[in-house]
Length: 78
Image 1 (cartoon, rainbow, N blue to C red):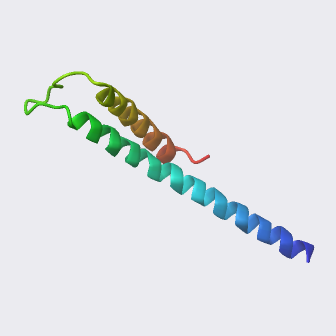
Image 2 (cartoon, rainbow, N blue to C red):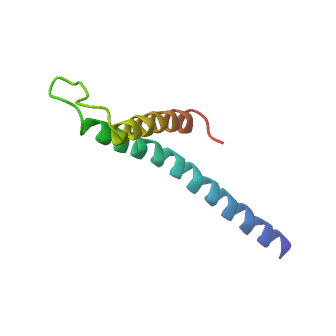
């Protein structure tokens, strides 16, 4: 009985680790997309920023965080 409980605990923990890894892999592209969307709302047709606003600044931060998260989560698994 103890062996069954120990095996069940190992299975549950391994599934939780997979869910955590999947979350980290999915959150990176989502942050990147939201950041790019916020920045693109203020771009002129030539590709320049119309004016610097807080949402464009937050977009740049989200874009950087998303790229870093994507790179880290796909190159090493914790």
